[in-house]
Image (cartoon, rainbow, N blue to C red; front, top):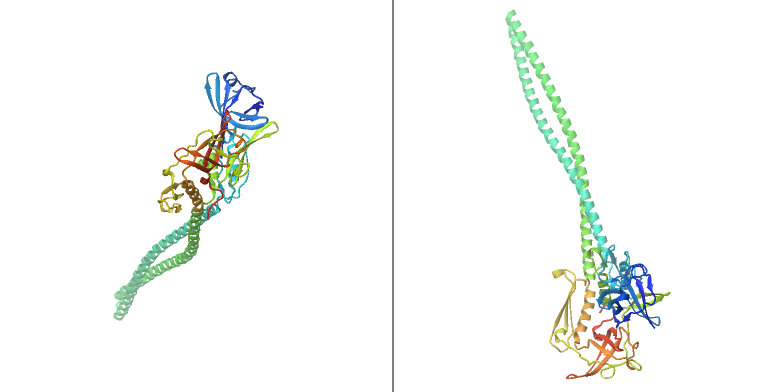
Length: 528
């Protein structure tokens, strides 16, 4: 028996375990994507308030679970309400819809050799870590794939080491410049002292010349005194004696000047010797510091080489798997990219936690589903259980046997790769540009999938299947490979393997199955 469980999205409070009057439309489940389901509710019931006083059906505020005999058919958030006269039309979007449009805003994360399933868990937990965000969505499943390398951490460490060596070099070089400034100041003082000494030396030389002249004058006065004494003339003798005394005084005074100026010169010599000794010591400090600076420069240059090598390695292998808030990446889109690159599939699983419905995301590696062939396998054939005529379409514009890829980086430094398949047809090239491809290996994986997808361009997008004995509901599921066959007017017999990527169970008993060519999928990780 079908019943509808109504919950408040923010708190998980059950508002009704069996809401009456609702009519479920055709649920659509999509592989590795968000499914939807339309619901119709009489306006009088839809426009009512719950026991908490809030509207019973509120966009992004209500979760509806559709169960049939306790088997959960669909569970989703009311994301759209259309007021259509006496009936309201509600759109339920599967719970993973909350992941889309929510940017990553946590601390920077750099994952190395990490399972992408762990990153999905981190993203799902992050989205629900904010107030009014926890809807109880969990993730199960693992993969053997590892994304990210340690080169980002090594680059971060190399940059930090380089920055440290730059700081060391600048600090020691600053000390060297300070020492050089000190010795320059001292040399300037020495130059001033040498000028002062030169002037003192000149003064001493002049004083010595004056002393020599005074001594000659004394000698002449003494000779004159001797001559006067021979004359016996008292007056001449007295005058000559006075002249000798005066000359002697001149010699004494000149000698004093010479002694004073010699002392001054000696003092200046002492000062200059002291200054020169200080210069020698200061220069020794400069030379020692210059040697330290040279060592610091060598270490800085070596650190620069290590940094460049680490940056190059990160560029080549793509580095760590990075989650950076300043890039504001959409968490849902990140999960899509992880699923595409690993690759893996994800599907919703609903279960009961006590008497309350719950939902989890199951990660299936390398895929979910199976190839439906052999005895007892469901078959899909036009005119038997395919209710609508097949309309396979082919577009030569999509065909390519060569794919050229451009990834992260700029200009000649960007990651580039070309792969081809010679198949007897003219060379046709498709270009794949994606700045999120950060390693050569990731580029090869993406190009291989692109090349395979462009080889076979004839395909059926969807089929409508009756609830037939050859294909009863439940005999096929998301991810299964089915062989679609029939006779197409003006084309002939058609038969190709397709993969189920969407299922809509119509209320009239038919099922619309969305398809993609099986060969357009690549399983596993990487190529040789």
